[in-house]
Image 1 (cartoon, protein in one colour):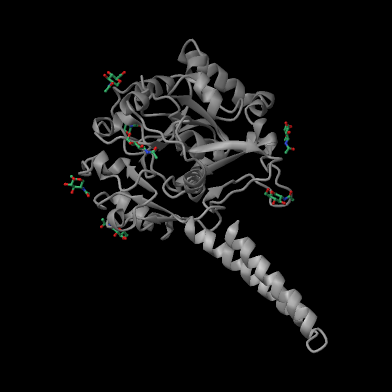
Image 2 (cartoon, rainbow, N blue to C red):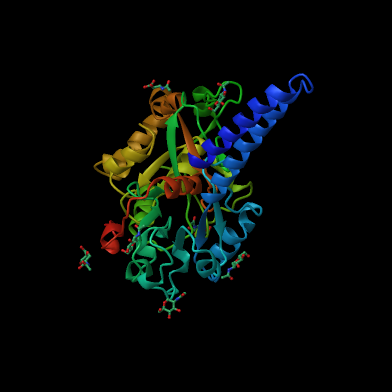
Length: 389
Ligand SMILES: *[C@@H]1O[C@H](CO)[C@@H](O)[C@H](O)[C@H]1NC(C)=O
Ligand SMILES: *[C@@H]1O[C@H](CO)[C@@H](O)[C@H](O)[C@H]1NC(C)=O
Ligand SMILES: *[C@@H]1O[C@H](CO)[C@@H](O)[C@H](O)[C@H]1NC(C)=O
Ligand SMILES: *[C@@H]1O[C@H](CO)[C@@H](O)[C@H](O)[C@H]1NC(C)=O
Ligand SMILES: *[C@@H]1O[C@H](CO)[C@@H](O)[C@H](O)[C@H]1NC(C)=O
Ligand SMILES: *[C@@H]1O[C@H](CO)[C@@H](O)[C@H](O)[C@H]1NC(C)=O
Ligand SMILES: *[C@@H]1O[C@H](CO)[C@@H](O)[C@H](O)[C@H]1NC(C)=O
């Protein structure tokens, strides 16, 4: 208040004074005053925004390809690193570990891929009271046992879990009538009409065009895992086109194109953890217009995360024969088929092809860094994280 008020008072005073003395001589005095007034405002604005630039440091040595190439150099994303241009708050992203000591960042991110390294840090190394140490991962903990052995105390989490401080999930859905603030150019929607924002999914056309089959893409050939065993058994009752390392079918067209050709997609997760619903369901299936057949957390959990009536959960059936019967009905009856696509009318899906750089999520983090000053720490992090069966 003070700087601004003082400045404005001075400008006003000068204006009145100049007006009285010079009005007759200089008719443009009033414009000079407006100019001075605006300059005063702009300077104040700039001053404030510089003050509130928050530095977000990814604490990494760039040893893993995922961190080095995908996150710090953005190679997989055409050089796209995190941008805050369209974010209402100002932040900067860095992978320069020297910034830890040189610039005392507002947030330190510890990324999943980097946990093979112990970071050589403890709470004593925090460079400010306000600094947030953040656990960042979109993978299930069972594939990364080192997470939970970490001796670091985190203030915030940024994961697929819905109760994370910053939710970094594989997708979500929103009402179509909302004016969406998509800050990420990587968000894609194949069934969005640019004309009126409605769904372009044509139920009749899709029903007749798509194969009455399940598309399954799998790279882990171990048939003893629960998911592969179920899929193998399901093959006895319903046609599955299996692609990947352990299949005779090779992808002639591109993978993306294939996803548009099936009524069903087998979206079995490789870990059964609370909220762990990945791009298999969001991107590979729903975004491409198929119905995901899901296995992962329980049905309630899926209901909370995927659009209403958009999926078929294994647990809904007594056995695989019953499931196959249902798939037959969906394949042969357009009304049942429509039931699973009804959500497209009211909602739209926000999902990302790649989960690596998400300006929107980083903007959430940026806003929270500015607005949420409540102290917080995860005292038993492994208990919080390990909610898998
Ligand atoms: C990691 O890579 C980024 C981008 O190439 C670079 O700016 C940064 O200094 C690197 N960090 C370390 C610790 O080498
Ligand atoms: C953290 O603090 C310890 C003990 O004070 C010190 O030896 C170590 O170098 C510090 N680590 C970093 C990365 O600054
Ligand atoms: C959007 O539609 C839903 C359901 O039809 C309604 O509850 C909600 O209030 C609407 N929102 C806006 C911003 O119109
Ligand atoms: C579509 O949605 C965007 C984002 O909310 C909005 O800016 C635009 O005006 C909408 N277009 C139409 C035709 O409704
Ligand atoms: C692949 O082809 C061989 C020989 O034609 C056949 O025996 C085998 O069952 C096939 N495997 C799969 C996964 O379809
Ligand atoms: C972050 O966690 C540490 C360790 O528990 C705690 O000392 C510190 O006050 C927390 N900081 C914030 C800003 O929450
Ligand atoms: C954290 O929670 C786990 C699981 O509930 C428990 O076994 C462990 O003893 C707890 N650790 C601490 C330090 O309280």
